[in-house]
Image (cartoon, rainbow, N blue to C red):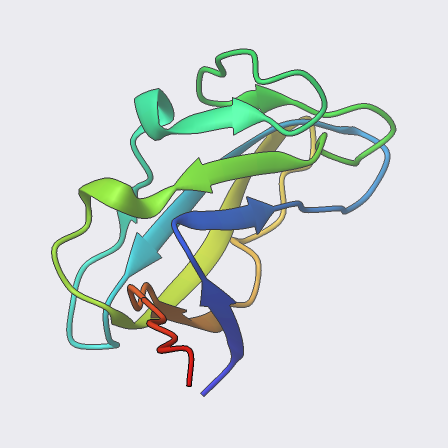
Length: 113
């Protein structure tokens, strides 16, 4: 199990050699599943909320911080994430990381004595 993410937002970042020019983020539920691109329509630039398209541009081998709104996913649980890179000498996809998506709705009711 990896890092736990509460709410509907997962932060995405990737870094590699300086000659990389783009990255596409992918996810899957388990090793038995195929990798799928994270829908770009659900991802925004963390800095200003602007839309992104895949591959997202990299500067000096680093992506900007992105925010993935996971609200469209139907189930909580483990998600494996990775980046696919573009550039002159593009490496293999990044190692995957696992996050635990836990979108628990919490309500609190206080009864004064």
